[in-house]
Image (cartoon, rainbow, N blue to C red):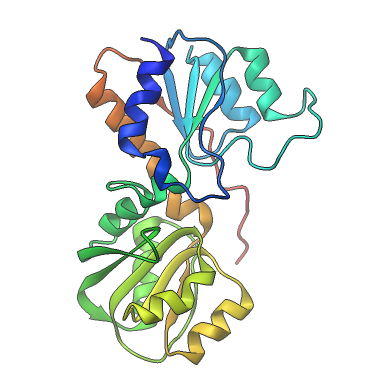
Length: 248
């Protein structure tokens, strides 16, 4: 198949118009039209490039942009240069996939079993209801088990029923979550002052790592591409890892 066929389909999954103005999404590295296979990943790293080469994939579709800040210089150490040298194109779906129906935030909401899911915070987040109310600690433990990850939380002081979530770095959505009527905000990363702000408004804040809240989208992308193009060679990255090591 051709690269433009692939990008046209990905545009239906996560339209570019949904992306934030500061974002960098779409076909960020182009190395020719022939698509021999697609590797789906959260991040494009040197390991991911080698993995795509070994799997004979000429395209990587990722969530995080391989080029985000403007390039002032480029060397062989840069992943974008490694892609070019390997002849591998990169298509990146970032905030447009966060907002898209069936995208990153919807996938996390489904993994947590939330009900009555709706968008909030201009569509970048989701809010829904737990199957049954939980204490802040019980919800943090539930999240850790569901996502298989380390979790930290700031107790908002009340039982939780409505959960807002923003995958990745969403600590600055504390006030938006409280205004939307949430009892808790679940995100990947949040800072010290985010936790203080949350407690000040009676909101529990749960941080379950950037990686764990978003890695599941690689499976979703692989599944969608396989369903749409049954003859296409599609691989889900196995080299993507959380860059942090967590100590007890």
